[in-house]
Length: 148
Image (cartoon, rainbow, N blue to C red):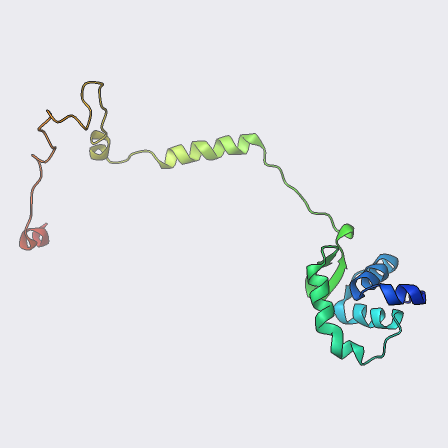
């Protein structure tokens, strides 16, 4: 891709500005090596600039939000690619809530019996309540545990 720049443009434009013009006029994606070679030619720089400046050029493209890196090392202008935004339907969210409630169902009846409901008069901080709920607690030694 050949692009003609005036001497003033060559003096004032950076690599990424020239790369933008090249991609804009060519209307096709390019690999970074091909793009940078076209930038060097357009700016009338010596060919040795390719090996000296390719790393800096790559860094410019990565940090410049006008460019996008595509698969297989291709680069293009971001404006040539749209981003899909997928909005989920509210019905799908309701189905998710229902499934979560089903997963949270209590399977063991003993766990259901341990649910604590406090009345206004019966709070956990009530010091008059001497029942600590440990009357059914049993301590087992190792031998008894092995036999279970």
